Each structure stands twice: as structure tokens, then as C-alpha cells.
Amino acid sequence: MNVNFSAERESYRMTLSIKTMTVKGTMLRNTLAFFGLVLLLLLNACQREPVPRSYFPEVGRPAAYQRTLDLTNDLKVLSLALEPGFEDLETLAYLRMARGATILSVYLTNGEAGESDVRAEYPHYLAAQRREEAYQALQHLGGDVGFMNLPHVWATSDSEHVRAQWPADTVQARLVSMLKRFRPDVVVFAADWRAGAQEIS
Image (cartoon, rainbow, N blue to C red; front, top):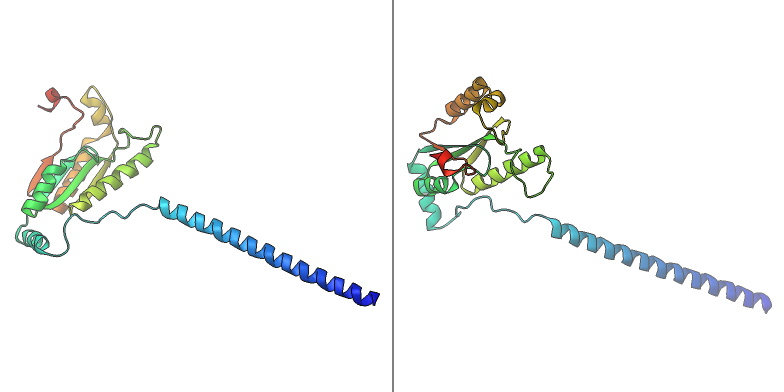
């Protein structure tokens, strides 16, 4: 009788132990699933929203009108700007959308010495950000971008410093190469918007 009771007690302990392990395992699985879900939600919230690739409609009357403009006009416009953000987007948008022009925006520098919203941003990070912004802006217009990758000269009081940073033969070779490849009908020079009115005129 005593042996039978001892065996029942051992069986009860084992059943209780198995149930406890099952409960603990279920709790662990539920906790891991919860944290996995929270991590997934956080990663999803941090994802960048996709930027529309182009401003132009894909279907309908406006799309047909724009495609007709593109096919009937062979106007090529080259925009030259000091750095990304200095291009004349209003003029380029007009030429692209109202005249059906093919647009190429070329930047002398990558803008690595320019102003940044984040202080102490490394120049190559800032250059990459500026290049991406220029690419996205022109992609909305259905245009293309090019970079001459000259060193960014932030401010100087004489042209000797600029000539030292931008050797004439290098600038000329890169410009000629760009002009030969694209063969523009119109060249738009973008002004340095930081310059005062007397410097622009």
C-alpha cells in the first residue's frame, strides 16, 4: 500500500513537472512572439515611404499629351549648377513639362562643403545625401543628373584659390566630355543663390 502511494505521488510529481514545463515553454514562446512582433512593428515604422518615381501620369489624357510632347520635340537642355540644390528647378520643370525637353542637370561639385541640417556631418556623407536629393528631384521631372566631382570650394575672396582647386584643363575636359555626350540645344546656368544681388549682376 505504501509502495503504491509512493508510486502515485511520483507519477503526480512528474505530471506536475511536465505541466509546469509546458506552461513555462508556452510563456517563453508567447514572450518571444510578442517581442518579435514589437521588433517587426518598429522596423516597419522606420522604413522609408517609397518616393514616386516620376511626376508624370502613367495613363489618361495628361499622359498622352506629355508623351506626344516628348515624341514631337527633340529639345535638349543642359543645366549647369555649382552644387545640388542650386539648379533652377522652375525653369527645368517648365522646359520639361511644357516643351517636352530632355533634361540633364550637371553639378560641378557634390556639395560636400555646403550647409547641413545635422551639424558635424562628414563631408562624404553630406555629398552622398546631396547627390541622392538631386537624383530624386530630377527623377520626378523625368530628367537625368551628372556630376563633375570637382572639390567644393565654400568661400573665397579671389579666383586664384578656385583656380588652384579646379585646374582649367580638368574642368575643360569634363565639360567637353559632357557636351559631346549630351549635345544640348540650350544651356542653363544656375546662379549661386547665396551671392548678393550686386555679385549676380
